[in-house]
Length: 278
Ligand code: URA
Image (cartoon, rainbow, N blue to C red; front, side, top):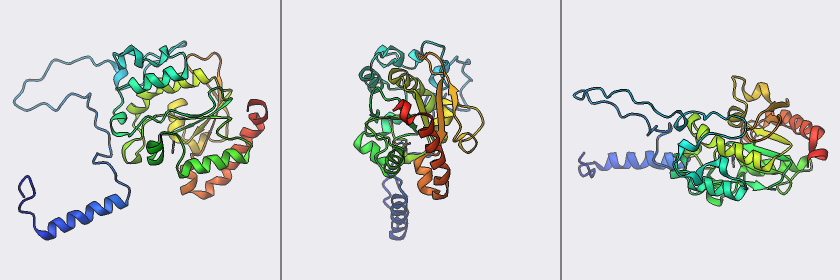
């Protein structure tokens, strides 16, 4: 076949079109790889070129930035000081900093930033994973099928979007709804920390494994951690913050049997704080 597919037979063309139609039916909507490419990595060395001297790469570009008490250190991720989350003293400034932040590749494939929903001074904050297709189109978190289930879950214990804050670990939709990579999570984490510190909620609800990995870390997964309160430290906030991991609503849509356990987690949230925190 030449570069334009000039000598492609009718059968080959039909087979390729059928494969493309199947991928579209299964939800592929980006001509991208499943695994994110690390464009910061050194290119492969040609065999006829001498090896370059080793280069020191600033760790914050590709790994979790250290978060000492009092602020996140991600300033070297972006030379634009306006994109430094620790400098944001209001939610509007934080949103503006994210709009300027060009260090996360997800921004390039997403339609728009999905910043947050709900009350700026909420006592309870729900943290999801990443925007999906609907959220990316509309610009609000949890508006698709998982969001509708989240609305019903909140309603069942007397909460609604006006009373809580809803954000995601990463604010841009990963292509094809894949799970955000550790690099993407670590690049966006200082913004999430700052968001939490600015809202100053009394409790966090971590929806699913990615929120747990980003904010608790460690080896234990959501199945082991769900339904139990624990305390985490958030840079810029004094004292520990109580967090409750539970299943992600998208998981509950796929595994309705798990709704029984999620319901006990909601009751626990209501028992601990809906009356006193909301
Ligand atoms: N899933 C998430 O984690 N967040 C959204 O905003 C939507 C679906």
